[in-house]
Amino acid sequence: MNLILAILSSVVIAGQVCPQQNSFCVVAQTQGSDTCFTIHSSFNGWNGIGIGSTRMKGADMYIGWTNSTGGVTVGNFLGGGHSQPPVNTVQNHRVVSLMDPKPSWSQLSFSFCRPTVLSSNGQSVTPTAGFIYGASGNIPTGNLDDINKINLLQHDANDAFQPDFSASNVPVVSNNGGSNTVKPILTPSSNFSLQSVIITHGVLMFIAWAVSPFIGIYIARYLKSALGHTWYILHVFFMAVLTGVATLVSFILIFLYSADRFSNIDAIGNAHEKIGLVVVVAVVIQIILGYISNAKFDPDRPAIPWWDQAHWWLGRSLFLLGLVNVYLGIAYYSRNYDLAGWVLPVFWIVIAVGIAGMIYGQATKGQDNHVKSTEDSRKIMVSE
Image 1 (cartoon, rainbow, N blue to C red):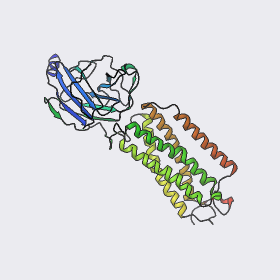
Image 2: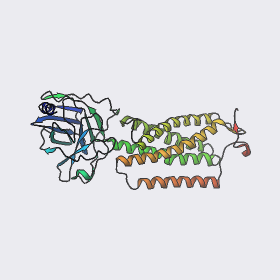
Image 3: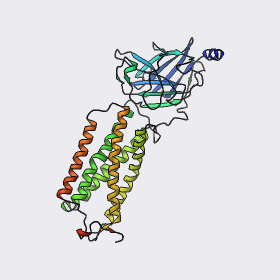
Image 4: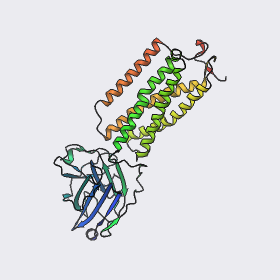
């Protein structure tokens, strides 16, 4: 065992790898029995690398951020999956002066050294070791000077790479991804971070499922006779444009920028993603049913046709499912970012106002079905 460790410690590590050109680069070099790393990043929140694994779990992680004095604090963490990694009980590194010139594009650069070989409490650095990186444009919360009291918000960019640092002073190109990594189609940036993407997604979905349906359903259920043909125009605006288009745009946005894409191991996140996919598919079907209902509308119909009934019940089910998923989205967001205290109260107030409005409409107006005989309003018409 001692012979193996001696051989590993004699390996010369030197080189550079840039998983994201002009956005995230790692420079490595041997200094005695240590390997020193310099990280350059365009993300000014926190930046780090993990050694010994191509996924978070099992990686020996080193994460740095700007502290309260303007310097850099670097902590050694133990990768544990899709959550903030726990602090290593043995901090096996030291922060050193910047060992590689800071590029013009870098917002945060720092260097640290650690033993090349570790027999415990970490992973050894070898020429073929797997690496990961993570970067965030969100400044950590908590005590910036204490690694035990820091809260690292979710990364905006991440990937696995397997560089060969053994070729002295030769820049090395990353393979841009390991077998266990799913890359986003579009990479978030410091100007449009993953958190910004998620907030935009959440606002659109909140409008689509917590606001617009209450109005659109109220108009269709209680105001047909009062508004005449205008009810249909308003219903289409709220349900097809606000709810339908906002849902599709929001889904496409998160699909393009998210690395999870239906592989989330977090229980709430996984449920949110799966339900979201069902909602997106169902909303397209619902819009088609709405078009059919309008195209086949007959003012002299004696009963409600089955396609209208299908449109009603799918709409009701979809509305409830959408509301549940908005709540799950808020809960999942709060696991990765600080949630403003007003978000949940506003959510519940909007729901309460919407329900109160529906109760008022039912009590004072009653459902307006547009049939010749109100006695037949709940019959299903199989054919015209």
